Image 1 (cartoon, rainbow, N blue to C red):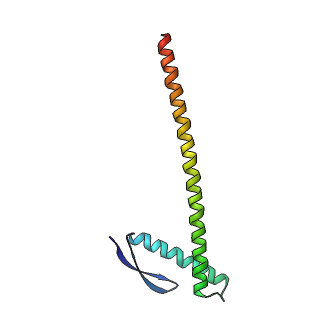
Image 2: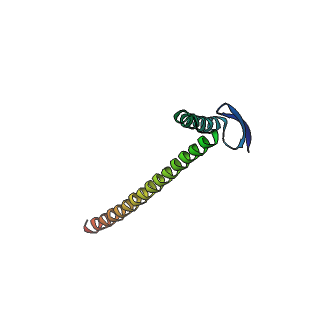
Length: 102
């Protein structure tokens, strides 16, 4: 169920509706606020809109990188599982062969 929260970005209140919890909403708002403040501190002539766009680009790039990392980790996990299944099959075969010699 969506809840309504009031957050502040650059001291401006915004009302958001989300199914996320208050702590998560506040953490995300803090991340956005911090990113925009850092960008505005580095370039005082930048507008709030420019800071928001640059912050959005940074977050989108971070998301893209996280997705790439997750995809790589899933691929590694698949490979490890395939190796484990092959080793189990070999072990089962060795156990059967040993049982035949007994």
